[in-house]
Amino acid sequence: MRKVHMNVSGRVQGVGFRYTTKMVADQLGVTGAVWNEADGSVGIEAVAEDKVLEDFITAVRNSPSPAGKVARLTIHDDPRIKERKSFDVSYPPQ
Image 1 (cartoon, rainbow, N blue to C red):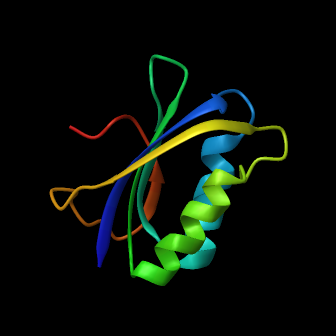
Image 2: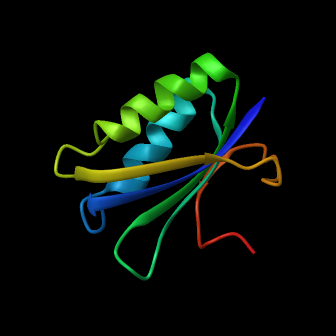
C-alpha cells in the first residue's frame, strides 16, 4: 500500500471539490481523508495500491468537480499516514 499526502490549490473550495473527491475515492477503493485548508487549498491523505492511487491522482489533477480548477498539485509519500476504513470529508488530521 502506498500512502500519500496531497495539497491541491486553485478553484477548489466552494465548488464541491471535497465531496466529488470522496466520490472518486469511493469508486476506486481509496481510503483516507480530504479537508479544506485555511489558505484556500485542499489537503488530501490517500492510501491505496500503486495503480489505484495513480488513477486517483489523475482524477484529482483533472478536478473531480466540474466547477473546480486545479492550478497546482503537490504530492509526497508519507508512511506515517494512518490507515482508515473509508475515505472521509473531514478536518485536517491531528
